[in-house]
Length: 234
Ligand code: ADE
Image 1 (cartoon, protein in one colour):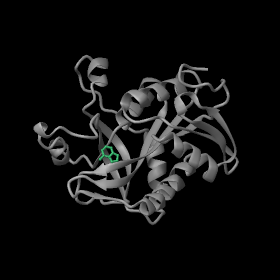
Image 2 (spheres, helix red, strand yellow):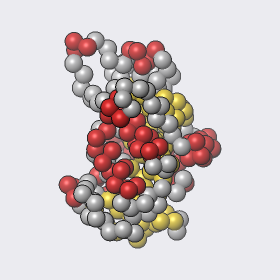
Image 3 (tube, protein in one colour):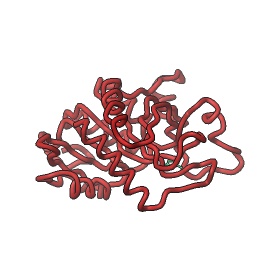
Image 4 (cartoon, protein in one colour):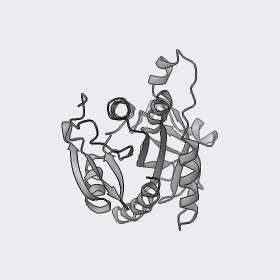
């Protein structure tokens, strides 16, 4: 048991898929995995272990934002010896060529969050995806009918921005950051700390400058495409 997880050692697979929404974890367990067992209900942050094509895999909700992601990623690695953490999430595009329903493999993650400033004493750390996972995901996704992008994302602490700041994404957009989400920089930093593998696979659910969003039906289709990639990495 860890502080936020009631699973016993051995209950959680080496590879863990990480949706932000715990009900997404339940949906994945119910619809994509076999022989599933729910190992965690602490704080409603559901976690399941099951099998995909005979391979054991877990799926654990992380909540939103970098403190929450940091808690779950740290405990999965420290307490449960997990080796491979794969975030499956959504993001808002800030580039014209990255459109609704496209899929992004986050090669790196910038952040406006303060944790790494404290951790690295004001110096800059570059949170990166595991190259092997990224390469494999890229190869799998290229064989599918998806609009794929590989590049930098921004893991932001802001979902709602204050008007007085102006456009908080303008500088990131200028430096070719593809999209905004809220967790990847923390995941990649913690994976690096423990020399474990991590990758974020993101579907584009909204286009921030263009003010566009996907319908729930479109979100379901792209979610299935993302799962097809993620599950092949197990
Ligand atoms: N996830 C999906 N859309 C987002 C947005 N606009 N900002 C942050 N995270 C997101």
